[in-house]
Image (cartoon, rainbow, N blue to C red; front, side):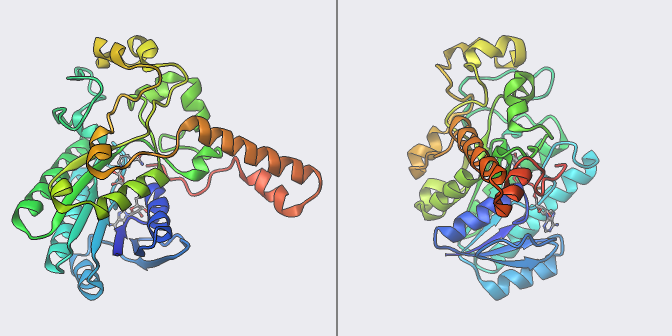
Length: 326
Ligand SMILES: NC(=O)c1ccc[n+]([C@@H]2O[C@H](COP(=O)([O-])OP(=O)(O)OC[C@H]3O[C@@H](n4cnc5c(N)ncnc54)[C@H](O)[C@@H]3O)[C@@H](O)[C@H]2O)c1
């Protein structure tokens, strides 16, 4: 398929774009700044420019658009600006896609639409699945709620297939190797202090697993995905101890329903994506941290032996690589 990805230079967009290209799709990445992505045709464009966005999609006539561009974190801008920016970017892209006859459009929403983080919020049920009520508590979550409704509107009113997904806390490949994650902490710090990951109810997902989800979504029968949303998360919790042992101290809003979580099972159910798309994540924090540690040890011992490439790999492994304060 010819797939346009907006926000292709971002934390998620980079892995998503290169992952789709590696799966055999022709990928055009659209962002305000390019990221030199392997195998991706990158176009520099601000998608708030409706005319330019329409012209690009009209000229490319892609099979699919995956819309990620926006302000990607709660309170990442003043509340009104965040709401207006995210919702108008989404509507601009959806409308341009409909006019260009794009058959499939998938937009990034967020688990925050259900409302956790607000002092009075309580989980309706655990594990949390797509039937959980949405109760946005800030402009970022509200923008995602509006985007989900816009998806449903375009699904109802156009011939295209429109859907959304709610990626859990995205961890990109360099973040397993020590770069700061979205909230500024490393993965190791989030594991060492359960209070850090409790803010997002211990959820996470590897960015490359999101790419495989999108690949499965693009191939799914229309009636399995049109107007539908999916949680996209890892198959376990980002915690060294079971959530059933942690929730009372760190995430009381989960309530006693969290006692039903067995072992390291996640708070967010990914059964809908498994049932409808046959998608399962392939990576978890234990295996990815072990692999990153092994690679660092190899690079360090090679550096000690004097190999110049290994010296830069070892020193670069724990530095920030393109992370944003989003
Ligand atoms: N990272 C997460 O943990 C997470 C979790 C849930 C949902 N999401 C959603 O996934 C999407 C991607 O998140 P991310 O973490 O990669 O964000 P990011 O901030 O790293 O990347 C967003 C990208 O969009 C681009 N962009 C913003 N406005 C643009 C515009 N007007 N025109 C063109 N490009 C523009 C930015 O330049 C940036 O490269 C967002 O919609 C975000 O809300 C992310």
